[in-house]
Length: 543
Image (cartoon, rainbow, N blue to C red):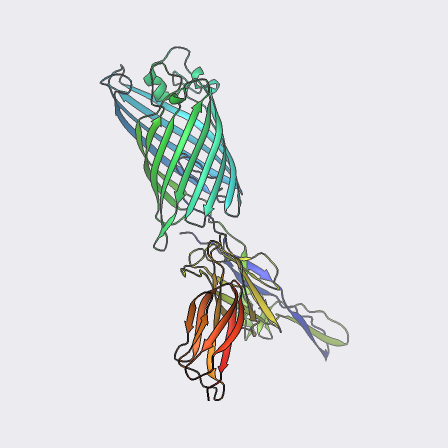
């Protein structure tokens, strides 16, 4: 839905000089190149009830994107009988609006307004309402690899008993520490632990009914807070994300019976129709394990069950990662470079500076060093699926590792100088074994293509063995033959062209190579994790 475009300037090259009579001109050529945007991948499961990342009631330690502005509209509904008195019917619904803004990386600020309406047939008046109760939120989150650590605090300033203003004396403050662990891009677990300082008992200066306590959320005791949430994020098609989640949350009162403290089990699902950081829709329900209202209790109490729905809209800018550079603009004549305020110098656009001397003209051109690029993808060796959380590093280049596309696993390198020798490509991804592959450097303007297959850290380390069987006398390929690894009981057969290829558990092995009418050979081979072992064998015919 949102696109970020970037332009970067690079200066690369070596000097070539020539001398002529008359004036001197010193020409400097620089190149301007567009950037490709990539970003590191982390778990994106949508917003919680307060607009921060998380399930519904349990917050995640994963931070918002810097500059993101999130607006949340939510509501819940409950219906119960015999809640306060025998034969009563109680209906409760609430609506709230949140605005959350992340001014800096890891930091988020927010505010909330709410309306609560409760109707009970056993009391007069039947309907009680609670309007306003503004709340202010602060969160800090810091991701480290697959984990994130954070802290959250919110303060509610309740509406006064007469509804004519605020009653700061009755404030409620929640301070919570959060920890989140992500399993790739599809699953995350969050744990919350904290403390609630509850002064809501100071709102009313008189005795109030249990139904009023329930509607206004008034408790007489502070509480220890805790919670556990498991979220999922499953891709459906190119953009849509579907995310079921489950939570267990509790508030243990200090100085009151534990059974009066609310303990909820929550099940819900999130739908992100346009992908992460756009629009989140959440629906679900709560079940009260403990903590329903009791007469003359110390805590506000919660409904036996409750259903909820919310919509969150992300209005901030799309996150932008470090740009990648591509090759310089080539040209054949000056008009092709005029849009950049440059001229064509030896086939590339460049800026010119002239220096006049008395006797001679010296022209120096900084030419771009010839370069090549590497493109391809990173895939799971077992399933063949793209690994969107991978990074790729190229030897002999400066800068941070290159992040692959989080959907396709594809990448394209910045220009790499040509030359003699080899280029080492290193791949890393959370929950995968590091992988290295070495290839000859490319020629000027060449694009090399790689399909990098990496192994899950939970799988046995494996490598690849490949090669061919040929007749030692004629050099003809053997269409029938096999390589047998006795200790693994693994047989690898050649194809019609005498070639073979197979994945083998890492280790050192004795192998037997055989073919009809040829002498069987025994050799030793060592296969290292992620390596490709080339094994070409010439077979001697039997006499």
